Length: 472
Ligand code: NAD
Image 1 (cartoon, helix red, strand yellow):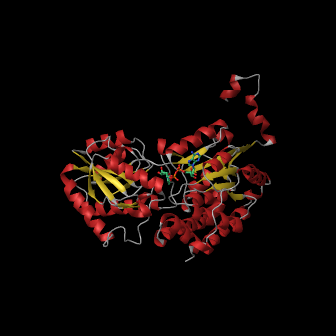
Image 2 (cartoon, rainbow, N blue to C red):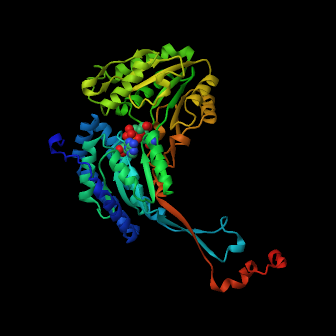
Image 3 (cartoon, rainbow, N blue to C red):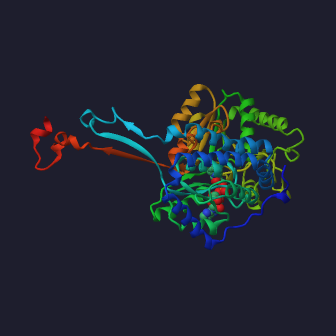
């Protein structure tokens, strides 16, 4: 394992260099070199091997920034992006190939024309990442952008500076720096980047900052993909396997110390089974943390004091009753996995995105009531989870929307890196992963070609119009 001392130092990019960086990647796009399949394949292979070679530094940096265990870091960050590279390499030729169009897209009357869809890179793109998965959520979109043939500027989160510094060094040493650049820093750097003209902006982060980005992008009609958060509900009926539901939801709130956009914010539990469900949560906690959560080498920490205090305030403000956990230690940004029993939709534990290892239980009398509450709290969350009978799960899917959904588990639908992932409504615009990552950075350009010799067949379109010809 690399030591903290051997990691590169985080340095914010000088603001006056940002226009030049943007201009370089825009200029490189105009050379057309990134459109060549060989260039894209080479960059993807280089990214794969860079992740392999920089593994010790990245693991050390993730440990330093988030106290992330190597197990989680490999599973959800490094290996994740490496699998993305391999998937894109395996399918790139097929994705990038022109699609020739025939029936049913082209009617018989047009069959003499040639129609096709060219897959063209959208251009020079900006990718802005969040802090919680600082490798995956920055580099997985990058795989899509390289695959599509774009040039890219990446802006990692400044809240995970050690990881941002390693990523910058790694990419600048290994990838084509005329086409790919990393700008480090916070709001001033992001603002400077947003003052540049991009062909697309891919943003992952909070709804509040997503709104700022979307507004600014609208000034230049720049398309944006927004991957945002949401207050994700879980539904538990009396027909659920309560022991497994508790265990699986405990997993969903302890991975990355609950700093997962997909993890549940609150659980709507049939009131008849609330006490049993709480007992099973306690059992799951004891199994995962036999020596207490703080002593566990596997549980991450809250990224910084600001977020520690945000979570502490949610707990201070709740009118509910803590039924599990509740301890914290500011000196190491530790918050114990905590469950609060609440009785009001207006409670802080229901109204704010938790994005930490804390969640609430809200007892309900029926599935009708549960659906009513969830639709009132947030109509379009990023995810939802339903633990019930087949019919109950189906009802939840039918009567509430979400970016994605998992039945009888926590965010398992988000565990596949080959299927589209994204929000709906105010939890996000657009999707990526797998082929969707390629599509996200691709312009689907329909091209038709009219043969010179076909003039007689198409002369009906010229004035003066002749109704008889139209009918023939
Ligand atoms: P954030 O919105 O605070 O920051 C994201 C990025 O925006 C960072 O790079 C940051 O430097 C930049 N930024 C912050 N404030 C800015 C401002 N005022 N102007 C311009 N740029 C600014 O998000 P975060 O705290 O890093 O991440 C947590 C949020 O992200 C949660 O809401 C979570 O749900 C969401 N999230 C969503 C997904 C998803 O895939 N949908 C994934 C991870 C996190």
